Each structure stands twice: as structure tokens, then as C-alpha cells.
Amino acid sequence: MTALPTEPVPAPLPFEDQLPTQPEPRRRGVTNLGDRLYQATLSVLALMLPLVLATLVGLLIINAGPSLKRFGFHFLWTSVWDPVAGEFGAAPMIFGTVASSFLALLLAVPLSLGVSVFLTEFAPKWLRAPVAFTVELLAAIPSVVYGLWGIFVLIPFLRTFVVPPLRHVLGWTPFLSGVFYGNSLLAGAVILAIMIVPYIAAVSREVLLAVPSSQREAALGMGATRWEAVWTAVIPYGRAGLIGAVILGLGRALGETMAVTMVIGNRHDIGLSVLGPAYTMAAAIANEFSEATTNLYLSALFEVGLVLFVITVCVNALARLLIWQVARGTAVGSRAL
Amino acid sequence: MSTGAVTAGTVDARGGARRLRRRIMSGVMTGVVCALCFIAVLALFLILGDLIRKGASSLDWNFFVKNPAPAGQAGGGVANAIVGTAIIVGLASVIGLPIGIGTGLYLAEFGSGRFGWIVRFVADVMNGTPSIVVGIFAWTWLVKPMGHFSALAGGVSLAVLMIPMIARTSEEMIRLVPHSLREAALALGYPRWRTSLHVIVRTALAGIVTGALVGVARIAGETAPLLFTALGNLNFSTNVLQPMQALSLQIFTYATGPFEDWHRLAWAAALVLMGLVLVLALSARWAIRQYRAGR
Image (cartoon, rainbow over all chains, first blue to last red; front, side, top):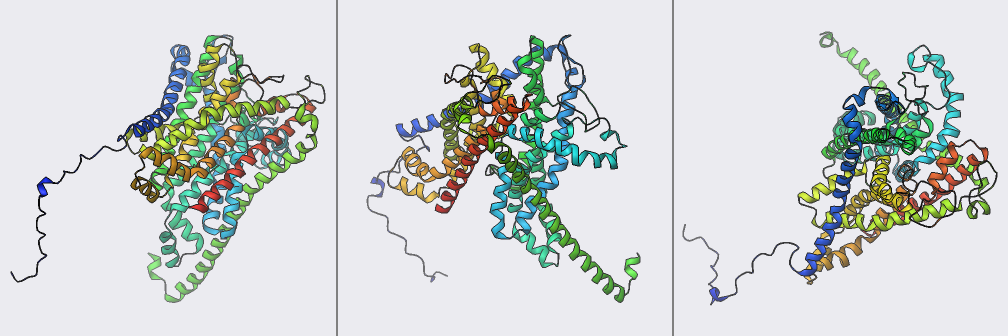
């Protein structure tokens, strides 16, 4: 036992106890004046954003105060909007916002999932980047340009080619009753759908790219067809992220203003028919804010803004949490235009 | 129960049919996703095509150098709106770029703690905030106390929209810089601030520029925040403390107005605005390719 060769123990250096001791470990980033100044400057800049958000929330609540006090929660489900009598209820706008956004999702989800699945799973390599970029360019088109296009191209198109056949097949349902004047819930939803496709497509594409290729290979190796591999192995793996992408699109649709304002018809009314005019919260603010003559009227519009803000924040937070589950910690979607 | 009783022969026959069905299914679904993708791409080309078809014919010298004609009269241009957009977007960039890039730099360099997490979360929340809400916020914050609408308020509202976006993209770009560069600089005795500014930022510059371009492209076409801040102006104005016209506001007014001539000008203005945004987006694309190629 004792015969095992051992490492020679290094002889203690002479005067070891007289060597200078290690300096105290210095804290990161605060070593000298320049560093301290640098970090302080950046901290101040970074502090701006939380400050602005706090101011925004504070001002919204303060300005919505009179309306909050007067109507309380009734504001959310009464539908009288009478500036002259001083009666305000946001139900029609909330309904219109939710209805147009969900209709838009109905159209946009298959389209954008088709785009992302095609681009990550089926498209030849050379085609992927150009097509992805083209779809992302849809996000670069200004909202007001979508509105212009909606008024002069989409609505005439809907009137001639879409509404008559739709009526023919589903005209007996309450959803397609009434006269189609052009400006309608349907037009708003279609415009919204086109506008949110690039967002959903870009984020869900990143989610699908984050799915490890071992998932695909395992499914293919067990004899699955390409589609079965996508459907049974890739999509379930990224499900949380894909739902997050859709919810992110929903958040966009809820807050979209100009294009919707220009085509949805702007009427305080709850109607089941998608052919009738409707209203959204954002559109109401855009249309009526500068005409709000009384304090209460203005305050009611601020409350509409507050409700809209709270809804979009919740929706976006939910989306982020879901996306983070798949692609942890990265700013998914920021690479999209 | 009955599946347990099938004979080998039927399994074979069924297996063949099923295999065929599965392959057909796979082919059909490939076609479906391909078609869906085609529709999305088609939408872009339809919109761009309509813009060019309806807008290009109105683009003449007058369009760029004349101010709007009185309502209902033919002719006139949008010179005031083009200059107005340039000024408002310039103001927004002057305010938004330093704060946005500084925030991104902070997040990349010191953002590992709780404050960094909060800033990141706030940026994501504000990225999803409806622009109209930012508009009424800017109105209460700037227009109401000042007593009148102004281009400055418009610029600030656009900056508020731009900062979170730029903060997040520049953070991501700075994080792409390899760690070895930082270590090399520190080993040479550079203090942290010089390492950060002279080595990290310089390396990530193309990426930061990309983020900035994308941010500017995003806000250049915004309308909703300008409705109650810059308001619009029928005359030529370069005073940032007064109401100012912008292309997007002009398009909104003209598109929803009753005159045929206004509609014509709206298409032309939309084409110009779209061209501006496209140039910014494409140069961002070009810059990022340079950057990623250099990594």
C-alpha cells in the first residue's frame, strides 16, 4: 500500500507567508470612475422605459377617473353611448373588438400556420428565405395603407365576389343577414387577418425551427410520412409556442386602429351579422377623441383606452409565457420585421 | 375486439390500402400548406400592385413640390406632408434611438439581475401596446399641458413606440458578439466601459443599425398616435411646436374624404410612404446580412 508512487509534494515556497495576499475580489462593473459612470448612464436610459409605462398607466387611470367613478363596471356591459345625455357604455365596442379579432384569427391562423409549416418543413432550401422575407414585408405595410386598400379594393371585391356566394350558401343564418353596405365587420376582419398573418407566421416559424430535428427524424425513422411527422411529432412538440404565436397575433388584432377604423363602419351597435357595420375600441378612440366635448365624454374614451390596454397587456403576457416555454429567454419575434 | 380476430391476409390488404391513403394524405397536405403560403405571398403582391397601378400615374413634379389644393379643387401636392413626415420621424429618432440603444446595451451588459428582467418585461409589454393608446397618452402628457397640438408631441409618441422595439433588437444583436472579444479587450487592460463602447458596440454596429432601421420603418407609417398629437396641417410648416402634416395622416384624410381627386392623391401618397418604408426595410435586411455574414 505504501509503495504506491505518489505525486511529489511541492516544497513550500520560501517566505510564502510574506507574499502579498490576493486583493479583495472587486465587485463587477464598479472598479473605476469610468465604469461607474458608464453603468450609471445606461441604467438611467434603461430606467426610462419603466418610467414611461408607469406614467402611461397612471395618466390613463387618472383621466378615466370620472367615468370609472360614474359608471363603475357597468361601463363594460351597457350599450348606450349617448354623449348628449352623458350615458356611456362600451359593450358594443368590446363586442366589435373581440368579434373582429376572432374572425380575423379564424382566417389568419390556417394561413399563417400553413406559411410556417411550409417554410420549415416542406419548402426547398433556396425558397425559404425569400418567401419568409416576402411574408414579413406584409408587416411593414403601414396600417393606413391597408385601410386605403380595404376601402377601394377589398370592399368592392367582397361585394362582387364573396358576399353573394356566401349569402347563397349560408344566407339563412343570422350571421349573414341584412344589407351589405361595404363597411362591415367582415371587411374589418379580413383586413385584420391579412395584417396579423406575418406576425403569427414569423413567430410560429421560429417556434417550429426550435423543434429539435431528432423529433422529425424519430417519426420518419418509424415509417411516418412527411406530413405525419409534422402532425404527430413536430407540431405537438411546439404546441405551446404555436398557441403563443396565435395569441400574439390576437393581441395585434385587438389593438389595431387605422385600417379597422376605415373599413368597419363605426356604429355603436351589437349585431350578429358580419355584413353589418360594427365598432372597435381603438376605432372609437380614433374617431371620437377629438370631438369629445364634455369632460365625462373624454373620460369615457380614456376608460375605453384603459380597458383596451389592460386586455392587450394580458393577452401579450400570456403569449410571451407560452412562447418562452418553447424558446426560453429569447426575444422570439423580434427578428421579424 | 374485432381487430384482434383479423387474419394475416386482411392485414396485408388493409395495410396496403392504408399506406396508400397515408401517402395521399401526405401529398394533399403538402399541397394545402403550399397553397396557403402562396395565398399569403399573393396578398403582398396584390397590395403592392394596386399601389403602383393606382398611385404611380399621379406622381409628378407637382405632387412633390406643391401643397394641397383647397378641398374639392383638382391639383395640388403633398409637399408639406413629405417634409412633415421627415421632421416627425427625425424627432422620434433623435429621442428614441439613444434611449432605445442605451436600454439594449444595458440589458446586454448588465441586464442579468432583477432590474434587467423588469426592463425586458416592460419592453415586451410596451411592444404590444396599441398605438392609439400611446397616442392618447402623448396627448395628456404633452398636448394638454402645452395647450396646442404639436409635431413634437407626435415625435415623442412615435419615440415611445420605437424604444421598446429597438431596445430588444439591439440587445439581441449585442449578445451575438463573441465572448472571446470581450475577454481579449479586458485582458489588454481595457476598462469595462471602453471594452463595451470600443469593442462590443463597434463589432455589433451593423446589427444595431439594422434594429434602428427596422424601428424607424415601423413608425414611419404610423397614423394613430399622430391623430391627436401632430394633428395635421393644411399648410407647409416646419415649426415643431405647431401642428404638422404627415403622409400617413394625409392618406387617412384623403382616403376617407368625398373627392375623387383626394382618392387619387391618397394612392400616390400611399405609394410614396410604402416606398419609404420598403427602402428602410430592405436596407435593414441588407445590413443584417452583412452582419450575420461577418459572424
